[in-house]
Length: 412
Image 1 (cartoon, rainbow, N blue to C red):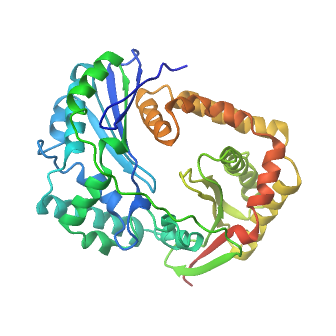
Image 2 (image 1 turned 180 degrees about the vertical axis):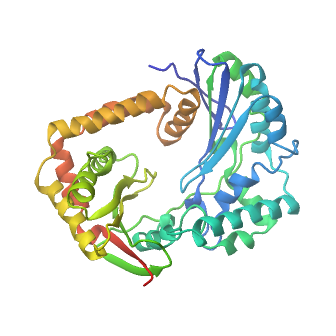
Image 3 (image 1 turned 180 degrees about the horizontal axis):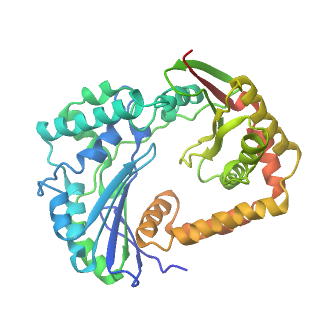
């Protein structure tokens, strides 16, 4: 069991800490409760743009990377539809440099036209490389608006079109920053070889003086229940036909979340999983196939995607997938098969949380989601899932009227 220490500062910043004396390093993970779902539908890609802008210089520090590298540290960040996450690692004797750097960019960025122009160019180029010039790069842009009609999950983190970022003004960027990147909208997780007393001292020195901000109110529309199958067929210059299917599933805090996650593993986690064993190795209907869930905060999607083997049509491939899904509804997953999936998850959890940086990221995520202590209840929650629950959820989820299907054909 981890020893988890917590504190909430008067400006609203939540601090979560856990000491690990087996390392000589310290990790700071700052999670901002803002993602692509907080964007305006005509101004998408802003959360991802900020992932880049936050490294372009803050109000008192012109270059974020240089002092960290001199101190022997490293850093990175990632964004999704729900959150933006920044993390750095630094030797314990230089821990204060991490607090100084992260607090300054929470205080304010160095908003200027040059920095915006540079980072905007980087983001637009990334959009072109990942979505326009890469095989299957536009799948999210096709499947998300098919599955979501009102919720802002209908666009990917990178944005709908590059023009939204290309046309972003300095005033719009400033407004987005001061509406979301605030101490009262963030969780700071600190792990590694640093005591809670020292963490409190440095947090109080560098973060506590930052004023809380008036946050933009989050008014997200609830996605209506899908009542009919949705289908889309496209042709692209790609090497192989591909099948993409998405089923609606509950939000991250729903008890059935764990059932859906186990269903995805029963279907495709490892060589002996059902889809790999039956449809790839035995029947040779697919050359590759995968099932996974997004893990999004709001009601999300259960994905199935695969590339049919040579000579197999997308219609035949899709029919074979439906057969496997029907089996899950009718036949209960045997105890041995379920136990194998649970064991694999437990070992992944245990080994994943040996690393002090992973612990920092998980502490911040669970503190934002519910409370940091829930991180240690995950194994127990997966362990409690029964074969009966799997069958009930499969019957509820894997219905044609709950499905969005994309047939992605190669040209010719």
